[in-house]
Image 1 (cartoon, rainbow, N blue to C red):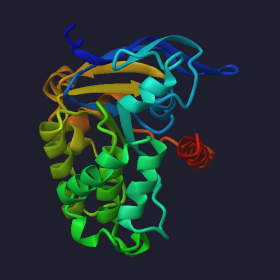
Image 2 (image 1 turned 180 degrees about the horizontal axis):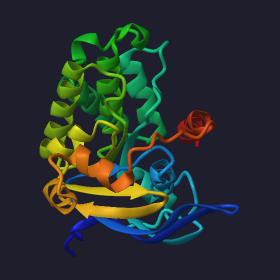
Image 3 (image 1 turned 30 degrees about the vertical axis):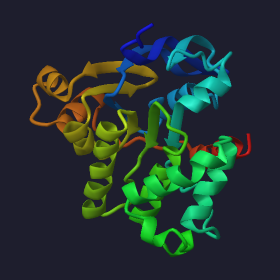
Length: 268
């Protein structure tokens, strides 16, 4: 049976926290092998949606399919289908690059016969092979991000989730990271689902974009379609036109929540 063209399907997805409706009946699809940007201001519902897609949070209602699997009833199959790079660093600083990769291979039960080759392949792909025996605490921010991407690809996932993959990096390093992301999209035929506050990254790299605000999808399409719909000069201008100019406050517990979810993921 041929694979479906959509590798992520979301239908009427809703998540409530008491009286707060963080995500309200959103629907979208992500095509297999595409690069998809999920954009929104702080508190718009991005992180809540990603948590539901990656089995970290149960939806209140609605349907999700990840690579044909249901995150509610087929968690293991869903988790094998994707890799994830969190916004906050998740590497062990006291281990070497190679040891971080080996630890991850244990979590995914990668056979010893494949582990050595796969680790070498990915560290060479991200130009870290010569630094494989160096402690991660001595790596630059860009090197750490490249190692996190390599680690996320270790088990041959179909989807790579990237939450703010270039946050805090200088423009040269951001461009370098995106060169790797585009290369792996082409070489590994992997679907890339990413969030970013650097809207130009989405305009330059994403085939499709969805903008979420106040828990609802307010616009979706190619960057060109969204720019045209807003009668704007750029995707950033269109984003501001759709979501407003007011500064959004990030939830005070959001970072700690992401850290606790990351710990749960690593020790699940």
